[in-house]
Amino acid sequence: MENGKTKIEEIKEETKDLLDHTMDYLETFYRLKSITIAQKAIDVGSGAINGVVILILATFAFGLVSLGLGWWLGTLVNNRAAGFFIAGGFYMIVIVAMIVMRKNLIFPFLRNLLTKRIYD
Image 1 (spheres, rainbow, N blue to C red):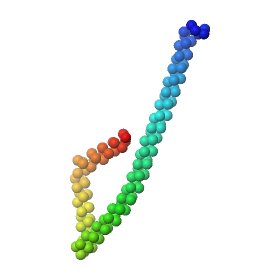
Image 2: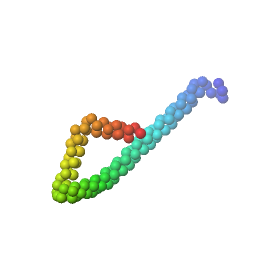
Image 3: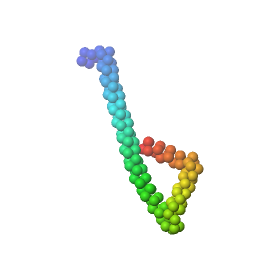
Image 4: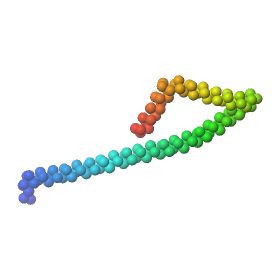
């Protein structure tokens, strides 16, 4: 019994210290999780904005390339309308191929890509 404290008083003091440390730990854990979630949200938001900008630019580029391809094919076959129909037919073949392969190739690829993005 040091300093005139009884064993019960020492246990009460240690319990209070333990409770204080536990509360500090929980508060720190809560703050860490909040920061981690905020960082993930920021990463997702910035990725989404970046994706939208790239999608818009890619759409413009794809449109201009498609117009150029149709025009060029039209010059080759001496019929501008036929050139645009050939280019459109090529795109229709690509769309049908993507629809056919969506369950075996496209969905697993997108699922794996999104899973990697979420857990990285």
